[in-house]
Image 1 (spheres, rainbow, N blue to C red):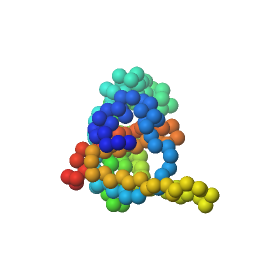
Image 2 (image 1 turned 90 degrees about the horizontal axis):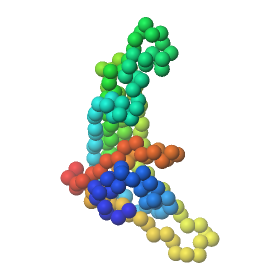
Image 3 (image 1 turned 45 degrees about the vertical axis):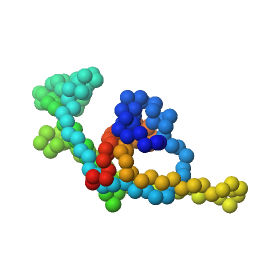
Length: 166
């Protein structure tokens, strides 16, 4: 992808097929790979968004039907808080999504990923020139995303506007 800056974030978020059309599926040898340290986090109350999408049962006393508990327990979810945090440094990438501890039902999901380079070397049967290395030096605005590879679902998108400020 060319140096498209933050307009790329808008395209990724607003056009579901954008990544499928522009994602580089061919493997190349990576040369210089430089990415700055950065941290990004977001915290928001997600109940209204979920209700607007039609998920209302957990926010009523009928949630006991979902939990296979007795109606006398009268449990319901009063709110859902979502926090996302990503930290990139020389050791790789650390991702944390969690629900805050002060909720009665707390679920924690810790994920870790490492930045790695995929190398495709030419075979001895190749008659063409060796593949050129592709450099990625993030000295300009860039986007990052967390995408599940099997379903291709994008879970989080963000961008670094000034990587030299870090």
